[in-house]
Length: 449
View 1 (cartoon, rainbow, N blue to C red):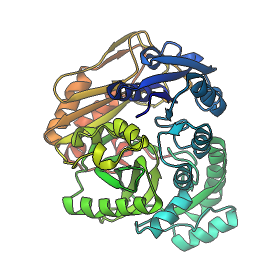
View 2: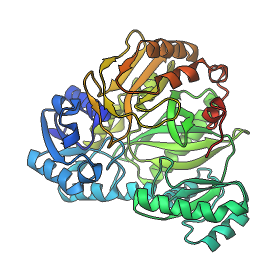
View 3: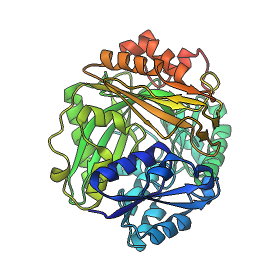
């Protein structure tokens, strides 16, 4: 087992990794920007090293600074969390060259899954169903028109080397194509350093369902069921749950086995998520893979009892799957609400000082957060303040517990999305499980722009 791990991240995921390390008897090293000097991950790690100014490009994304901190602290491994450098194949390679274990997949697999067009091709070759689309990157407007004529409208243009809704445009007619194509390329280059985009058929009003996987370094891959992630705004997830109300045991087993076989074929190790769209007829289509731990991993932990972060660490240390994860049993239902520092009506960021902070508790409620009273939410990073997770024997109980938890969650000094989550949970269609990725737009009765 590792002696000391550096956590190349901040916020609640850095604290989550620290907790896992403490339980495993591993010392931790936090890195922080000048804006995070008083952050909780700095306080609770065994050691802490400042790696630069507030902007992430000069601190959390600065590979030489992170590696220098790791060498100064003499760590065995680096856990990247999610976001930042978690899916950066170059960073994983630098870790290897520095004789530091990167807690994640191999650089080759990260690079494969990060190039979305290549991932589509690899997963199609491995037997997963994919959405009809371009054969690789589309480099110019003429080629885009040719592809569009082949797959038809409406269609989607997507950044080939990124995610999170950036570099993504919906095109509903021939007249919209040129503007959307050039806008998506410009946005992709700004966000990910590459203008490459690919195109695929748009699935109208789909459900977004993802499978959690784990792989060891000895060729074993397992899945831990699915998560429903359809409640989104502009491709940013807001509410996640497990299991999905539209997934039956037979489909879970069939699709889960396909996922496992595909990832075994490409040599996947560590935690990861394989994402699908489900159309109105019930057909599933692979869209991408996230080669890291996900923000919404707690709902899987709640229904399986598997500590995914501890599993990541143990698998990276070379342990075999059967030593880390026993037979997986799915029990009950879990829901996660992401509480962001945003105006719940306009979604504009709301950074600032938190003047009062009280987290809910009680049976079946978990809160993952790095916030506290008098903490400052800086304007430089993701706006996530807390993740509220509820667990119940069934979905009805999980919803009731989440409603009770949100009613007891106090955050003052900044605006948050708690009122929005209350509105979602009170909606009859949500309660009945009748929703898709356009649910929020209909809830607000506004057009997607």
